[in-house]
Image (cartoon, rainbow, N blue to C red; front, side, top):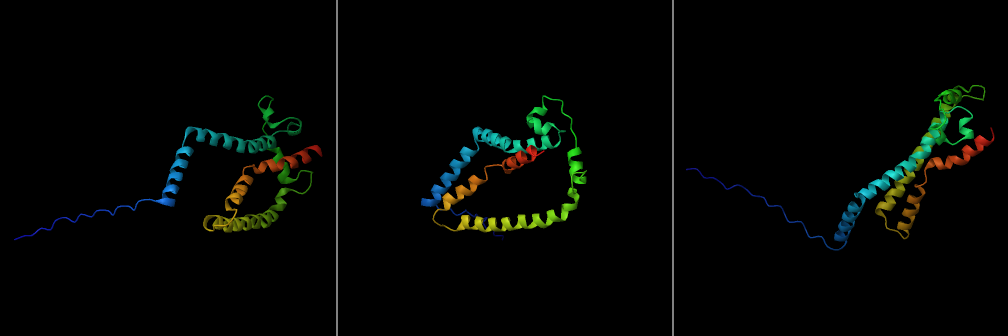
Length: 170
């Protein structure tokens, strides 16, 4: 005589119903997901990315132009004018061809300055990120928006005054 046992059927426990804050948070997340996945959001993101990258492209183009190109016309004129690509500006800077000490002598300085300049701000940003994520304090949202707003301007824009000074002193 054989006896068989019925198969064990495991039914999942029903999820607790979302109420109050959790429901509102889930609705906000769903709403944000819908807005951010729209075609318009993608187009705006591409426009922002191109605008953000444009100053870097300009710096790259100007760095590969022969004199007097960078000091007499904008970088966008390289399309119209005969443009000769050259790496001589980089080799002159590396070797110091008659203009002073070569950049190759300053690699140790670069390492000594760069390592603390990277690790100290990252450490402070880590502490700030923890505070923004887990600690509720007065003015948290305003401060977060201010920090975020400061990141909108590309770092290359800060180099414009330096470029102006260096090209006018020539």
